[in-house]
Each structure stands twice: as C-alpha cells, then as structure tokens.
Image (cartoon, rainbow, N blue to C red):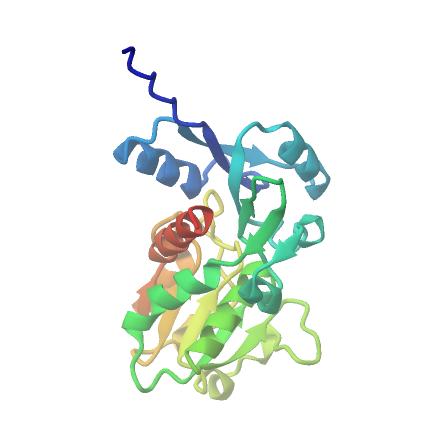
Amino acid sequence: MKSKKEKKPKKKQFGLIGKNISYSFSKKHFTEKFEKINFKHYSYANFDLATIDEFPKIIAETKNLKGLNVTIPYKEEVIPLLSSLSKNAKIIGAVNVIKISKKGNLKGYNSDFYGFKKALKPLLKKRHKRALILGTGGASKAIAYALRKLHIDYDFVSRTPTEYQLSYEELTKELFSEYQIIINTTPVGTFPNIDACPPLDYSLFSENHIAFDLIYNPEETKFLRLAKENGATTKNGHDMLIFQAEKAWEIWNR
C-alpha cells in the first residue's frame, strides 16, 4: 500500500496596519515567534496605509490573511470597516486586533487594555489611586478602560481639551499632587523625535509617582528620563507590547 502523502500545512498570513510603521515591533516579534515554534507556513507583513481607505484593498488582495494588528492612527478609524466587535472593543471604542474568519468576517478586539493592565499592576502600591492620561487618541481609551478595571480614577490631559478634560496649562503643583500615576499615550518622544516630551513641569514628579510611557523606542524617552530624575518609578511600553501581542496570538488561534 502506498502511504498517503502528508498534507502540506496551509499558509497563514498575519500583519500590521498603520502609518509610517517601518520601525514596527510587531513584525519582528511575530516573525521570530513563527521561527521559534517552527511555523514556516506562517508569515507576518507590514501594511503601511496612507489612509484607512486602502484597508479594504488589503483585505481583498492579501491571500490567506487570518489576523491583523492595528496601530496609530487607525485604531478608531478601522471600526466602521469591521463586521463586528468584541465586548471590550465596543466599550473601549478602539481596536488593535482583527480576526478574519473563514467566511471573511472581520471581528475587532482590543488587547491594549490587557497589555497595559498586566504591565502596570506589579508597580502599584496603595498610594496609587489616581492617574493622569496624557493624550486622547485610540490608545488612551484602552488605558482608561484598564484603569477602571483596576479601580483607579483618572482624568485626561489634552492640548485641545473639551470641558471634561484638563489642559497642560492647568496642571499646577496643587493639582498635579493629586495624581500618582502619569501615563503618556501620545506619540511625543518617539524615535526619531527623541528630544520631544509632553509639556509638563517635571519638577513636580516625586518618589510617589509612576511615570508610564506607551512608547518603547527609544527605551527611555525624555518624559521617562525627566520623571526619573525627580524620583518617579518609570516604565516604558515594551512589556505592554509583549503582553498585548501574546493576547492577539491567543485571539487569532481561538
């Protein structure tokens, strides 16, 4: 009897959608992961989109596409183009993971809140009761959701605040002292603009503060360096990225 030929594993394509993403963590992370677990039939690509209008073309023309990560500036803009959202993504109002079903349905998820929560939790002490979220984009929404899960009160800080947000100019010594966690969710300070930082009075940081920056390149942003010089505990976005990426992998393989 002739032995049946072993079926070749089906190719599976994954990727990242964003803008100006050549620096991306995700491609390196997942390519190395596929090599490590010997999934030679899996591949990961960057889809650099000038606008979100290019998204349907990526979906239509990319063969064997099973899952996508989503980064700045499309975490909110992609939502109307999806078939459905997970419960968490719906509440947050931002998506950073997309799962593509066999029928071609696109379901949006958010693993940012999970990654942030897991990265922040080991740093928390009883005194860490209130947070300032710098920025109001898609990433900030996931951070706010994670803080709610951790029972930490928060306020948003924006260069163009609404009546429910704070401006940077309003952050006096008295007001700043009411918050123990300061989180930068803006891209300010990302490589190559490493000399930039959010416009804060960094002398107001103390050993009672946690300064958390979602940026991971450079490893220590000017925001983190200045906060650290004034005694704050600091954390960059690397661990959050690892945790959210592993959650994305879990979602794609459900």
